[in-house]
Length: 208
Image (cartoon, rainbow, N blue to C red; front, side):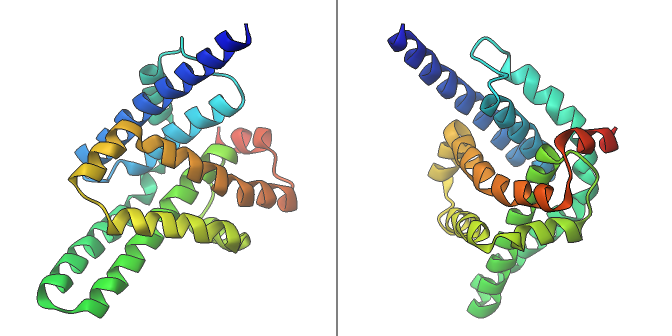
């Protein structure tokens, strides 16, 4: 019985990781990154359900993803972050081509910060579930710097070593990295909820 349970958990985890990876990174690549936030929110909410044991291998991950994606479309109000992100990508490429290395690295750092910012917005939306402004998100980011550092470094390395091969890896199992980052981001969010007295129920009530 224990072996069956272990096998079930392994299959369920692989199933979840594969389909959420395919859905998330297909959304990001096909939308030129503009639909990144709703996709991240959908994946984070699926991860939250998995942690709370509200999802299993018999559930339709595709159906659940698009359901959460639809409800997370309100986060498109942050689409300006994506515009700035793309401008920095272009700026970095032009800077490298023209030999302006310092400017290129500056763009790289800004890009990394913006991606981390999007990850934290998705985390806040998932685990607090209420309207929250950019200042509060940034406050949560720096609330526990030791949690921010590994997230920043991970995103920075993924950006530096991004390639066609890495893109394929992300499409197949990139959500695993997203879930790992979600767990790290969850800690400052829980601390913020604790010091402000916000509960998940209150957050979702405000959101509605």
